[in-house]
Every structure is written in structure tokens, then in C-alpha cells.
Length: 257
Image 1 (cartoon, rainbow, N blue to C red):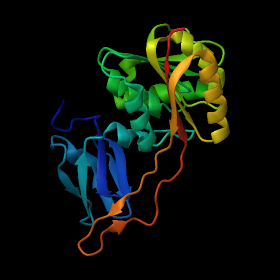
Image 2 (image 1 turned 120 degrees about the vertical axis):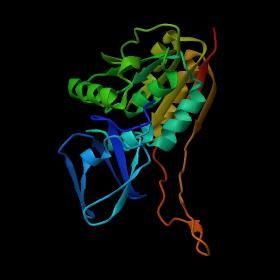
Image 3 (image 1 turned 180 degrees about the horizontal axis):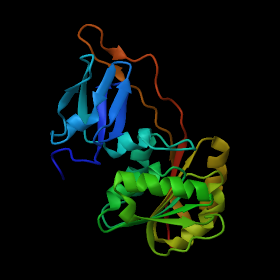
Image 4 (image 1 turned 30 degrees about the horizontal axis):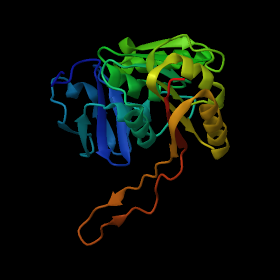
């Protein structure tokens, strides 16, 4: 991993917990903010983590972007899954380096990119999407995030079929995941994991019924609530606003019939 910033690298310019800017380092480029502008080419050759000042004296920190940073900043036309949910989806899916995962729908690619960062360098993500425009957006995002080599984008409808067999996990962010359940069962290896993210409880009920009917076991559904803390001597307390309900996560494992 490179320790110094080079031309065409992405940098996250961090001002505070509410304001940060994902920029590509190019000669002659300026970033204009309410705190003044920054000459982006001044970052060339600096170490990640270096501090840089705007023309008004505001101090920014040049961080190396993480997958989390990209997820919040990438180009998108659809709602993305929050990192708090992505983290649990990946943990409960049991995937790791070398895993083969079917994922859909692709959307802007946030979930697929996060999965790819865990299955690389030997694994593979097969990401299905029915809309061509979203496939094009996702392809650009994957390239920028450095995970394109580990993701195979596929135009297709998972409610109709899954082409892959003997995969380790099937992970869904779809409106009708229950229609995918029979195909997921056929695609998964024994003990493989099915994971579905759904915003409404009606979707969850239909999905669980389909999982039982198809022969899955170990079925669970949960949600994640995320609350930041304001940490300051004499004033430490939970922040007033929090990320509450975003969706339900349903998991199950393939039991052989």
C-alpha cells in the first residue's frame, strides 16, 4: 500500500465529523469550500494523514479513503445500505478471502464493493442488476474504489434464476427477496448463508415463509440501531439525533434435504 500521495490518487480531505471531501489529486486542481480553497496539487508527495491549510487558514487532514468513505461519497441514483447494516450483513454471512458470493441488486454498488473488500484477493462477487444505467454507475464506482477486479457485473433478474452454483453466500437488497429464495437454495453449497436486507416487516414475513418452505434453517431477523456519543469532558452524552430504523436483516443457512 502506497504511503505517499500520488497523482490521480483519491484523498479524503477531513475538516470535522460533519464535513469531508473526496477528491482526486490532479495538478492545477482547487477544492473550494466555505473555509476557503485548497490547492490539491500541494498534496503530491505528502504522506496520508498529512495536514494542509486552505487559503483562509482552515486545517484539513488528507486521509486515505476507506470503503466506508467511498460508500457515503460515491455517485448514486438509489438509496444505499448504511455501513452499520453492511457490517452486520458481512459478519453474519460468514464470508472471507476466497468466498464466492452472489449479490443483488447492484444499485450504486455500495454493498457489492464492501463484500469484495472481504473476499479479495481470491474470491469473487457476482452482482446482478436489471437496470443498465445502474450497472454503468456501479462499474465506475468499483474502478474508483479499487475492487473492480473482484466483481463480475451481470445484467439479470435474480427472481428468475441464479446462474452460479456452489456459492458461499447469497446477499440481497431487493424489493421481493422471497422470490429469489428457491434459486438461492439451488445456488448455495450446503450450509451456505442467505442474507436479505428489507425496509419493511411485510417483506420479512414473506421471505421467512419462503425460507422455511425451501428448506433453510437457522432463520433469524434483526435490525441495527446506531447512536453516536458526544464525548467532551463534563458534557459526555448520547447525541440528540441518531440513525434509527433503516431496515431488517434476515439470515438463514442451507440445510440439505
